[in-house]
Length: 425
Image 1 (tube, rainbow, N blue to C red):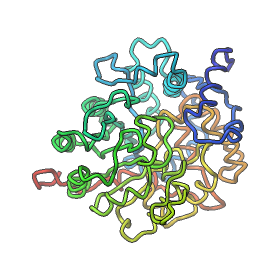
Image 2 (cartoon, rainbow, N blue to C red; image 1 turned 90 degrees about the vertical axis):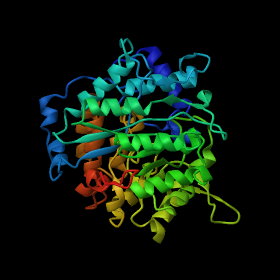
Image 3 (spheres, rainbow, N blue to C red; image 1 turned 60 degrees about the vertical axis):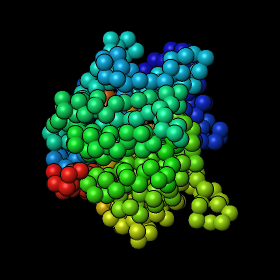
Image 4 (spheres, helix red, strand yellow; image 1 turned 180 degrees about the vertical axis):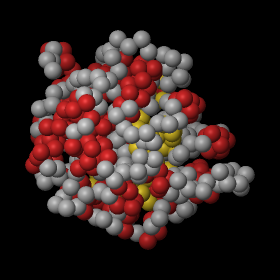
C-alpha cells in the first residue's frame, strides 16, 4: 500500500507518542513496520485465503457453537443517536496524541474517513468480519461507562470514550446470531445498584471495569454490593489490570494493580483479567517495601493462590502484540494447568493497528512456524479478526498449543444464572 507523507507522519507520530504501547524508546524504535503503518482494509476475503490450509486447520476441532470472543470493543461517536461519545480532545489538533489515537483506532476498525455515520460503519464492518467465521461463532461487545470522581459524579473530561449499555444491548439484539454484550456500570454512581440490576435483567454476559481509566478502586466499600450480586448470579467481572495506553481516561495507574482483584475474589466473584495483565508494572503490595513487579508476574501469583481456583480467569487478547514479552506467550502456551482458565479474546479493533502485531517476530521467537507468517500477513489485510483467531490457533512452543477449550469460551461463561429475585435464568 502506498503511503502518503501525511499518513506516514501521522502513524509514526502515533507510535512515537506511545499511544498503544508501554515500550521504552529503544523498544518502540524496533516496532515492526514491514506490514505498513495503516490498515489497508482490502475488503472481502479472497476464496484462496478463506480455503487456505492455515485457516481450515484453525477451525478444525473447534465447536463453532461454543466459539466466542470475550473481548471486543463497540465504539461510536453518537452520530446515529447511539448515545456514544468520544472525548472532545480526540478532535482537537492541539491535542495531537488524542487525535492520532482516534484516527488509528478508526482505521484499525476499517471505518472510512468519509463515512456518513461512524456508528453504523463500525458495526457494519465488524459484522462483515464475522462472515468469515462459521455459523455459531459469537463476539461479546463491550459497553463502557463514564469515569467518575470519588463522589460518584460523572467526569466527562476523564472519559476517553463512552458506550451506553442500552446501545450495546441493542446491537447485540439486532445480530443475536453473532453478538452478545458486556455491560459497564461504575460502582461509585449513586444509582449504581439499580443500574447493575437493570443490565443483569437485560441479559448482559458480564460486567467490564477498567479501573485506571474509570477511577475504580476495587477495595472501595461501594464495590461490595456489586460483588455480592455478581457472586450470587455467577456473572463474571472482566477487569483490565496492568498498564493501559489506548484508554488513558482518569490516569489512575495504581488502580490497575492485579493484586487489588483479591477484593472481588474474596467475595466469590468470577473474575476475568483482561490480557492476563501482560503489560506494565505494579507495586508488589504483598511486600513491605512494595517493589515494582511486572503486572503479569502478579497475575501469575494470583493464579497459584488457592482462593482463586475456580474464580480467576484471563482472556488472551493482546498477549501476542509486539509490545509484550515473548515470555508471556511462552508461559501461557506451556502452562497447561492454566488452559482451562484462559479465554479467547481479540481486543477488536486493535488487531487492525498494523505495527502492533508482527508474525515474523513471533516466528523468530519460536512462537509460530515461519511458514505461517506470509499467509497471516495477507489474511490481516482483509480481516484482522480472522487474523487474530488464526494466529492464536497456530501459536505454539514446540508441541505445546492452546486446546480448543481456550476458544470455546461459551462453555466457560455458560452458567445457571440466578436473577436478582432468586430465580434461575
